[in-house]
Amino acid sequence: MGYQDRDYYQYDQDVDLRPSWNQRSAVTQLIVINVAVFFVNMLIGDVTAQQQGWVNDLMMLRPDTLYQPWNWWKTLTYAFAHSSSGITHLLFNMLSLYFMGRSVEARYGRREFLRIYILSALFCGVVWMVIRGVSGTGLPVLGASGAVLCISMLFVYNYPNATVYFLVFPMPAWVLGILFVLTNFVTQPGAGVAYDIHLLGILFATMYFFLRWNFSAVQDPQEGVVALKKWWARRKFKVHSPEDRELPTEQLEAREADRILEKIHASGKDSLTSREKKFMERYSQSMRKRKELES
Image (tube, rainbow, N blue to C red; front, side, top):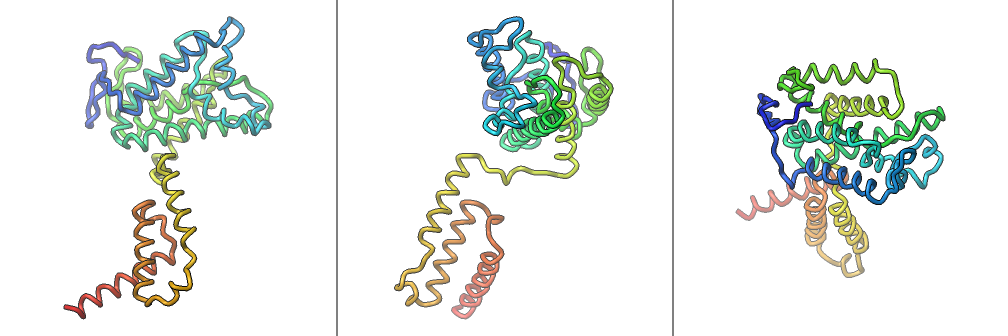
């Protein structure tokens, strides 16, 4: 893909593919992580002509990982390690992520973009591990290709008429999407190229776009911990004391309403049970009637 400073990337449909750098964007941070892992492995991984280096060995995914539950975390880490035999593997993945990922991040937002990227990498890793583990065939896999192709296909689906350059040839994005699919279906599997991972990434993007998935319900880890603490605190104080039983019904209902409102604030309306939703409807109606009588 052309990446020179000249205006190689045209834009339409509010898409701007010209080079820019935003250190706060998810694309930038993912590129930094991938590049950092690559150079750490090259510097301290004891890389040889026959060995990928111990950092890559630690992170890469193998078919027999299916039978090693203690190593299942590699279904994600493989996507942040790249071949130490040259920089081409890393370069092409990061260039694709850079030029197409920025528009996809702008379309879905930083957090949703990260969820898509991480979950697509995990999807590719898990499915590949199961298929290869059962068949007992295949070389170890590493690289961000599955997740990057997922992002690239989401670009194609969202901006099919945007003009992009493949090598030096201008074409609509939808043509590039067809090339992505055909080359990975037609090309015969070879050493060092995981075409099945590529196709799984394309599949994940297709399901996400056409099934209208949204991963906003998947909280960030820090937010999840905070919500869990608040939930546990509510559980601890849920048992009513004997004094509570003597309180007027109105006061007890007000306390329950406060508890539910706090839950909505912490976890959103979707976190409410059907009982809590019905209670809030009844409580809201009773409060409206009370105000009408008072007025």
